[in-house]
Image 1 (cartoon, helix red, strand yellow):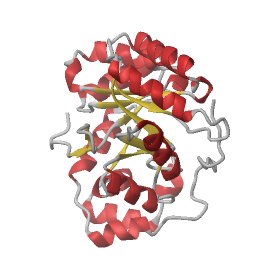
Image 2 (cartoon, helix red, strand yellow):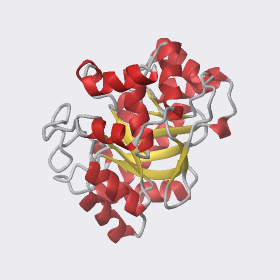
Image 3 (cartoon, one colour):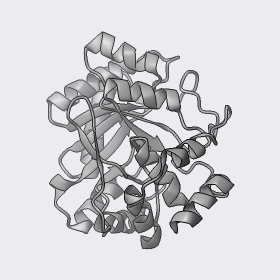
Image 4 (cartoon, helix red, strand yellow):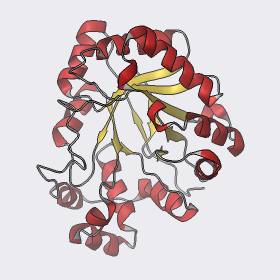
Length: 281
């Protein structure tokens, strides 16, 4: 288990999350269950999943296998774009809960806005009602732009607690992070190391890592934590799981943070998935 306590971040509505979570994309079956259960044993308490990852059952089984108190864990899942209509969204949320087999899901997100379909407000209303029913705890979004979030709040009066977005040194998302900060929304980062080989070989990151005697990936995650962004790295080995989690205790100077942020590129998205036009079902 990690030696240092993990810092916490808070949303406008009181949601508290650890500053580093664990991504589960592509972790499935017995192998995935083992990796996730070991992550829990190593000190992770925030686990990220999605209906479209097809591993909600794996996450639930890992929770049971780890034997850790359920109340100390935050399990996340996400609603796919093909189920944005209210009735379909509610059934999908119920199915997510059934798949995990752990009674409720702590944090549920709308995975993508799919603006061309124009149904993300209906999906959000389903999440609000699912929260009222006790199916989920906190609710949020993923890959939403400010205008999408403002539409949700204008139409329902409810602001998301979380927005999970693509964010890494080649795509630092400074404007989105600032918007979230101003509105009390927790920023989560998917693919926090981006194209790992490319980012981790950046001289700036290598120099900081060498100076601090840390792994380059841990430096990138420490950069997230310093910006109050919650990264969701995935790792199967104990060594990488522990190294990633320990990043929460690495202190970076303002100059080091700025130097990593300066690696941002205009075309920094990994696959060009712009939420203004991208649709995922």
